[in-house]
Length: 382
Ligand SMILES: Cc1cc2nc3c(=O)[nH]c(=O)nc-3n(C[C@H](O)[C@H](O)[C@H](O)COP(=O)(O)OP(=O)(O)OC[C@H]3O[C@@H](n4cnc5c(N)ncnc54)[C@H](O)[C@@H]3O)c2cc1C
Image 1 (cartoon, helix red, strand yellow):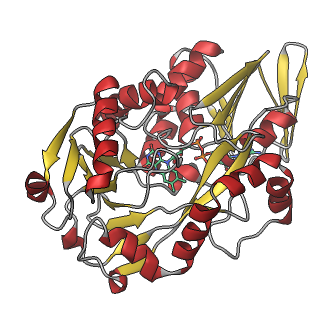
Image 2: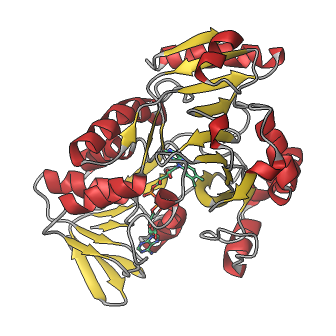
């Protein structure tokens, strides 16, 4: 029994079904992939950023290959177009070189190239050097979900079915939904932004708490400025990759996402507010420790969220021709990021088991890329 019909929950269900299990999926929304999975950059990451040996590193490198293969096999649009990570000043070069070494350690094909070579890939980019990564791709994760759902034909897939209460009775787990009680042998919690709450409903006391970070996007009017994917060199002290330019499969170019604290776990606009969610975040000691540590970055992110001019300026560091008037607001996404009480953000995927239960407690990016690998790992635990 899987709670959550995002890409991770559906991939887990498909993996269990392929091993001969009968599967029930409970999803509270009216369609599959309604939250993180349906509001992301649609990038199949190569796996270059993550600490060698971590679940993220292993599962994104393997996931890059398995996700592309899955898409091709199931008629889901995918394009392995490669990307550029660009150093815009010489003080970013040590970090670019460190990234190249990390790519090598993770077995990701990537090569350092000069500014002139970078212009051959992206004629409008401004950089002093770049890292060319061939295996990065673009995909439609909602279409991946649709394909996973098709592969689960004959299983018990329930939309509009929120899990309200959970208890273990003998050798079964029971989940109460508005339509009645559902029973299963094993429960897998893939509830994304609500995963810590589902774990608590199931009787666990998870050490980490989900903190929602909204990521806002703009669409670039002058799509001719970008051919593929252009990323900055990430700041290793921050959990996110920095605003980037991503060509989508339909030819549009998405710019973002930034990262601001969301005032509701599934709140996609500033005006989306939940008192319960805000109190939850405010009461958690980690929030204040994080706020102190990243006070300056946090203020800059809020200002950039409120000002299209600032957003354009961040993008113009990568592609100088981008102007404020080129940007049109697009839908945002909210990341489920697990945080510890000491204010540190959980870096790796976090999956915890209890008798008859497996809980995915941290599955931020690149979990869409890695979904099929996370699913295999979870199936081996059940
Ligand atoms: C802005 C942004 C950009 C990103 N870009 C990328 C990218 O380019 N590449 C990449 O690999 N990853 C990316 N990610 C990360 C990726 O989207 C997520 O890691 C992935 O979608 C997580 O999938 P999930 O199934 O765990 O969560 P979700 O997709 O959030 O699914 C969880 C589901 O659980 C359901 N649920 C919650 N509570 C209940 C309940 N009580 N009962 C029943 N159902 C419930 C929710 O409705 C939801 O549908 C990005 C994320 C964001 C937000």
